[in-house]
Length: 602
Image (cartoon, rainbow, N blue to C red; front, top):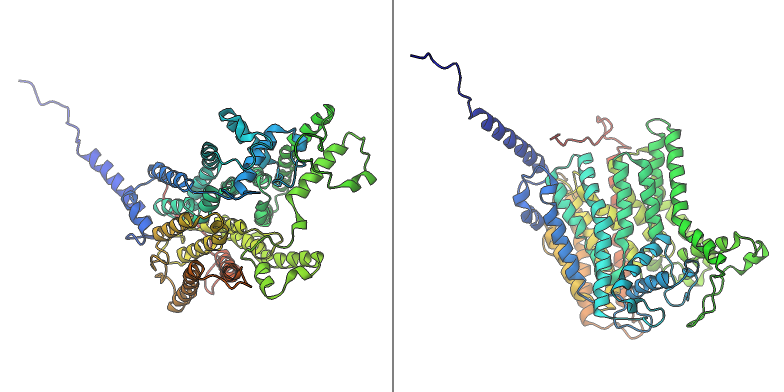
């Protein structure tokens, strides 16, 4: 009889048990980390994504998020747009369509000179290149959409579908990927959980003001904002030269990106001098920046020289409205008009003049900033333009120097959103030539703060303040949206965002956080409550009571005053958060604070 087999059966129960324990451990760590932010659903958005709270990766829920926000954008685009059925000039929709027309139908040397009275091109070259690409694609579908002169004010429903699609595609190619990557990196830098990062991503992509302006009113602001977010993401990743490239792209798409320029410069300069001087990094960033700007204007320069060689000038005598005359006739007194460089100099100066229209005045229309609010009490137009420009420069510098000095002295990466928000608020409130839509610039980095560890925490007031800023910003743009009968999308989009984040007027769950003193909780709640009550009352009065005949803009003026006061509070809050997080004045008995990455390595 054979002896016992030397083979010992494998214990199949141990490995699965170990694997199960490992998976349970990972899930419990994730849930434990998320419990620092949320233990039970505090607001409807958390309830909506509650089944995914145990996920160890944001990529599990990302497809659902992108599909949902994409469908919401497309639905918002079913409404009207700026200038819809509003002759003779129509609006921003016609301006964007017209730029696609002139960039595809005219030589490149005429882009910044052609018929400036009809939505002349007044954005930097990257916007022109983007318009050229969209126009080329659109012409393949229907060339009549971009027939020079003949297509002005065209309201073809199929053209509307194409134009809406260009906004969504542009956003999903630039803004959405940049935001996804930034939220992932910033949440890791701040030690926030994957769960809270997913919630923050939804809140950022559903930001009401951005959807209302780009997808309803119609513009391409998210392309520029996407490049800025890519800049921040590369700074977080330590790719400083790439951050310079992306920020030049932002400036090259819309000059409003200058709102962020001081903060980006302060951050990069601080990184070059702290913790030790790094001249090679500084020189590298400077050279890449110069090369990026050169590459940006190179097609304009080469196209101008090519047109000159073909005998085409920037002021042709063609059929239709007369082309614009040179805006710099004094150049002939200093430069040789026959020299080969003269057309290039003229082209670049014209482009700068169109991009920075100082002749338009201190502010445009009714905007909720300091100057427009002050104009209610003191008529500013009676003062010389030079004096107003100097005053705007002084106050703007006074408001942006403190946050940028902090960022220079403490170039910590987790301070970037707060620094950009404070700087952009300073520009919006006090700078020259501000538009209502410029409020998107401070709102974007302020909303990005939701991705930090305190962003959606039950122990902080971040959700209350960031929500307040976004709802107030959308409210101040209501007079702009009302002109083209966009009350319904405004109401639906703003109230939906407020509901998802548990904000007034749908909920008070953002107030009275656990980690604050009672007096601070009540102070914030009372101040915000007063503003929300004023905003609600304003809507009721504006809807049912006509303003006095001698004061037809009374309700808009009230909107400006309330909005300006609220934005000043938002600026002060961002500046305070920057001071606190930078530990410039650490509390007694505490060392210098530092945000560490508490996320467990998988």
